Amino acid sequence: MCKYLLTIILSFLIVQPLFSQAEAELSIKPRIGVMFSKVDGTFVDFVSDVAHDPKFKIGLAVGSELHYQTKSLWGASIGLFYERKGSSFSAFTEFNNNSKWVYSDESLDLEYLSVPVFATVKIGGTGVMLKAGLQVGFLLSAEHKYAIDKYIRKNSTWTFDADASERESMDVADLCNKFNFSIPIGVSYEYKNFVIDAEYSIGVMKVNNKTTNNIHNDCISVSVGYKINLK
Image (tube, rainbow, N blue to C red; front, side, top):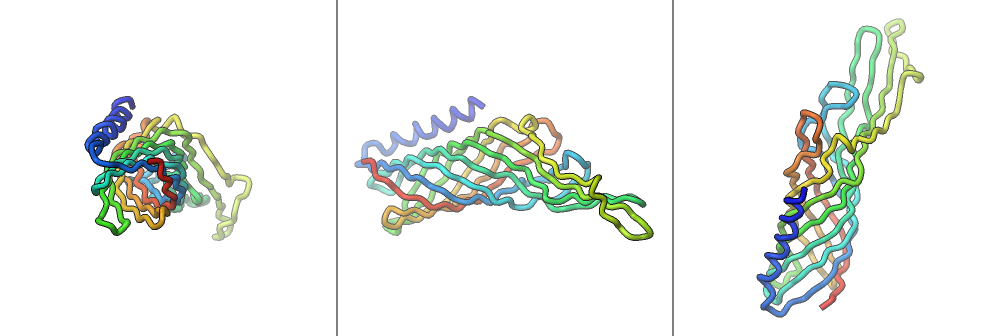
């Protein structure tokens, strides 16, 4: 963990002096937005050995970034964000001659405190800015939720068994890495200090640490914010 955090900090310390000789602008940008995330591999259910497909899960991102902008096109930023991401999963069914189990409403809910570092470049005077960087996320919580509905065959008809059906929510933080490392790229547009930001984050560290399947969490986020000039 320390080497990834050190990489993030050193990235900002190395990039920032590159712009220090030019007249610069320092600003803070509080932002709030929505995240669309899913794991990029097959997730094996903790209850069943049946593999099933991940789907996008809607989450939240809120925080702020400190941005250093020269009078030229180049800049750098570092941020601190609370992020809710993870993945949803498609429903699936297991059955034998007399019983059927329907698995549904399944999700892997992950909460992180994330620190992104970006190098940025403005596109002329259009208000558009491109950015790419590194991000480390520290795991706050991890939950696996699902529903199992059981049906019993009676006279060739499936009958719902309410007593054997269940809704579960399990703490799976011990099965997940305590931090996550990713590569975010994005674009933002600024108009009269209001900022719209879109990012795509590629997970390069697996989420799980004690299961054999390798899961990486990829995210798309869209946020709005406001730039407050400090310098």
